[in-house]
Length: 142
Image (cartoon, rainbow, N blue to C red; front, side):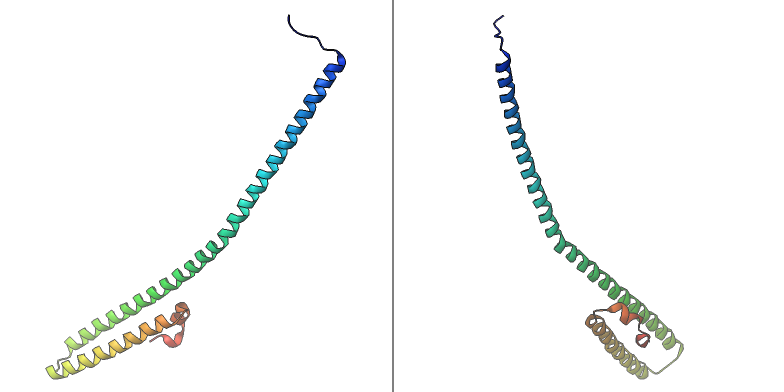
């Protein structure tokens, strides 16, 4: 058969050498695993560190978006009020006969007053950082 029989000491020595080789390999594998684990932890920490500024930016953008929506809603309601006032004035003017000169003078004065009022409202809206509070302030209700 071509197989050589080993005595007990030789078998013991071969088994001992194989055990040592496997121990050494196991230690190398464990060290490699630990290094990979540390590297993964470092990557996770780096990602978390990079994510913090992004979360702050998102929060800031959400706040700005909310403020912008408040301004737009306020502006829309003011435009609606002006439109209603304008239509009401038009109905009143049609119901009251006036001379043409008086009508032109009154329309011109009313138009100038609305333009000044509109500019003031726009300046107030753009100058305030808290449009919601301004909108709810009873002294601003006309």
